[in-house]
Length: 161
Image (cartoon, rainbow, N blue to C red; front, side, top):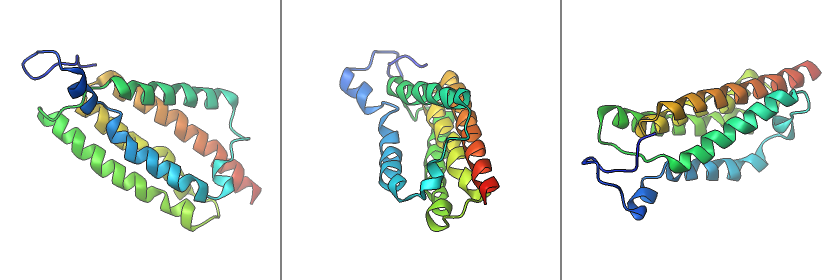
């Protein structure tokens, strides 16, 4: 991870570090999830068919990614950081739209996997803005576990139809 310093190498004051925290851009995504999750079909949250090891891997990945975001220091100084910002913004918008299939059609379909897969876009964008390859690796591993969870859950729901 990039040390908390400005472009000249001087340490960032606490207030500036908090303002550039990787957690801040995630707040709208958390709010979106919290607002819409209660409206999803009950079967969307079905995880009885998901092996415990997958649930555990997903939980560990979630902790690494979301707790790890609190120590990221974001910037827009380099070309890759600016690209990361664009990936984050576009990925967040596409992710928000990906909730429409399960919200509008309560019958399980492969489109229900979109909210499981698409976090990779905005998480990679966040990692690029922080210039943190390690964070990107954790993000990809988390999304792999998250998508595996979705595949098990969706497979069980489709088999039950």
